[in-house]
Image (cartoon, rainbow, N blue to C red):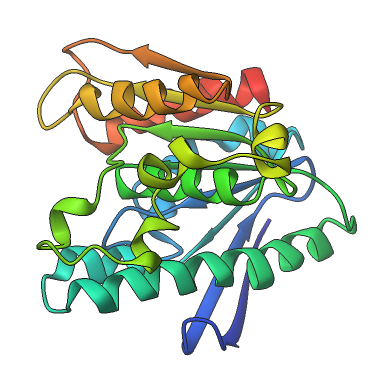
Length: 241
């Protein structure tokens, strides 16, 4: 049921791993939180919560190490370095992970679902927005969508093209037309350490461009933690995957 793949990534210039759980079904690319690795979602029992869907062959879950997220939150690198790494991480996802998932699914054109919590939610939305040719749905839980606070005034092109909040207002053409056929779910608690305002902010940007989306408030009893996400993700994948 579980398999681990390793290879050297020329995009992020380091050894990377991709882990898969499940044997059949809709492929779900599940991004870790900022400091997480590919197996974080298993250690925090999110894979266990998805067990019924995995056992039924409805989904296959893939996850990788959080490279860019670690850099942003470490506070040890320049804004330019983190922005470039975020862009390189996107290239790694699209040109390396996406073909690996499609190869594992034995389909060259299967559409993938993205999901994640916190910084993982940012990556889930960013991946779908940049690559709607390969991804059809994002489930972005308790999202942190504005990383500009880490730039320290050093705004740059790498950051701009990595941040949906910033580039979507000017997006036109075929990419936007395809995005208007996709869907982004933005569930968030309203308890400790949650900021549902982040979800409403990205929702307004998406809505202004005609990109289907929905914010789901879960209330003050749901906090920014794994217990919340273990309830959220099975619900949405059961409904939409």
